[in-house]
Structure formats: C-alpha cells, structure tokens
Length: 406
Image (cartoon, rainbow, N blue to C red; front, side, top):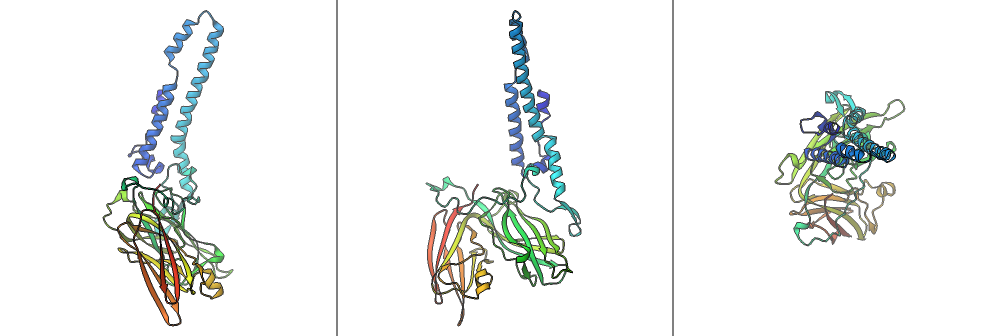
C-alpha cells in the first residue's frame, strides 16, 4: 500500500506535468500537499497486518468468529485500497491524460503564430473538468457594505482596466463588420468576464485601425495577482451570400501578474495578438492598490446627449462609459435622454486608492459642446453622491466603492 502512495505525483516544479496541471508554483505545491495528506490519512486508518494476525491467534477456538473478523478486515482493506486507487487515478496519470486530451481540442495552427498554439485558456488545473465558457458569477460591489475596524481588516490588490481593443493591422481592407467575443480571465476565478459580445446580426462596423471595439465590460473589477488573460474569438461578417464569414482573431494574450514583476506606480501598457486576419492591440492600465468604483448616472433635469468618460489622475487615457450615439435608445429614436438613468456601456473602473477618479461629461447642444469634470476621492467601501450641471442638464452621479478580493 505504501508503494502505491509513493507512486502518487508530487508535481514538483521540474515535473513537466506540473506546468499543465496548475498555473502557479504555490497552487501546484498546495495541490501536491493536499494529495499527500489525503494519502497519509488513508494509510493511518489502514489495518496493521501484525495486529490482525494476533487477533486471529486469540480466536483459534472460534472458527466462525475468525471468519467474520477476516471478512470485515478484507472489506476494510479493499475499501482503503480503492480510496488510494481513486486518489491515484484522480491526481495521477489519468488526470494528465485527460488534461492532454482537453488541450488538443484547443490547439490550432495559424501562420501568424508560426505554427500550433492554444486558441483558448489552458493554464488551469484539470482542464478537462474546467468549463471554458462559464461566465464568472462574481458581481461588482461585493464588499461595499463590509465593516472594517482598521486597515488590517482588508487587503488591497492590483487590478486591470481594459481601455481599448483595436485592429492594429488587418490583412484585408476596411471597413469590416465584426462580431464574436472578447473575454477576460482574472485571478479571482479564471472564468469568463465579457468585454465584448455581439451576435452576427448585431455586428460592429470598424472603418479604420483607430477605432476600438465598443466594449461593454468588465462587469466587475479585474484583479491582477497571477496573470490576467484576454481571449479573442472574433469573426468578420460576410457582405453577401457570395462572401462567407471569416475568422478575424482567435487566441489569447497575457497581462503579466504581480508575482512576475514589481509595480511601483500605475502603468499604461499594451499587448498584441497576431492571429488569423488581424493583429489585435489591447491597451490597458495596471492599477496599484486598487479599489473598485461602480458608477451610475441619472438625468435629474433637462435632456442629455453626449459622452461620459472616466480616467484616473495618473493614467489619462479615457475609458468610455457612455456615448449617446452608440446607445440603442438614441440610435433608434434619435432623441436625447430625458430624466432617468443613463444607460452606460461600462460602469466599473479600478482606481488606485491614493489617486483620484475623474469623470468627464460632454454634452452636445445647439450652441456646441459643453464639457464638465468632477473628481472623486476613492474609498474602501460605501458610496458617494454628487450633482453636476452640464449646460442646461443636471446629472446625478453615484459611485459605489468596494475592494477587489476573493
């Protein structure tokens, strides 16, 4: 039995299987420790052969009782053996085989990648059991109502703001009609957090490399502890029956986690993914000691037509929260937004707790464009209410704060 335990995988950092069975060294170590403890507990509970023989010797005068004892011991021993075999099957070669088979299903060839590459997320323990399409159930504002007696009651982590996703280069001519998905996977659960999601009949027209996809996520703050991944699966809609739909971008790019670098300040970064017919450029901000700001805006008086953007005091690149030209309301009716809640494309921004959140409101009027800006000091929890007048429009602004944590 001990030999079987010794055959269980330890998943050391030098074991090639360890790279496919876990993302970080700490996760692999934790898994290996858990397996060894489970095996040790099984051995502790197993019967001692010498004790069993002594028990049998004491019962020589009662063969029937001896048979009963032997049967019970055999059943228990069979149960322990079965537990060990299941443990080995779950964490040993069987898991490696299933993991390998699951990876083959997301392995593809692309000339831009120079050969085979993974088109989807693969850095997870037991990929065969991981649902690549499951949406993250975690909502925003999870810790808004938490009560902290001191700063030792909570811990801040780094975060990511996805600012834009553009076609840095294209192997065919613009314009193109794009549909499909762009998702993020962060340290909290590695599940899908949608940044862009459109069906074929709701495709977005891209006229040049300067235009970003119209992002509608993330729905919550993206934690940056281990690596964060951005996964694309974008298609070009054919113009007519003679031109079929084509793959625009399919693959995954990586935003380095804090475990792989030292972050002294908030940083503006970009990364690129060259696949299929395009090179996709993702611009993002890496935010130090981040808190999550969930924003809502209401028209209190007047009618609003314009744009709302957000940025922070250190990263001035603006994140588009609302554009009246892009909302279904304005597109279909051609009217301004009367009193009521303004529909935001995105509502969540990660902010360095020692900086400021800047919200800019631009209203288009008959007299031209009027712009106003408000600055809001980040908080660990709770919310802020403010009013701002932009031309003839009065807006109510609410920001709900939360830490970003597991």
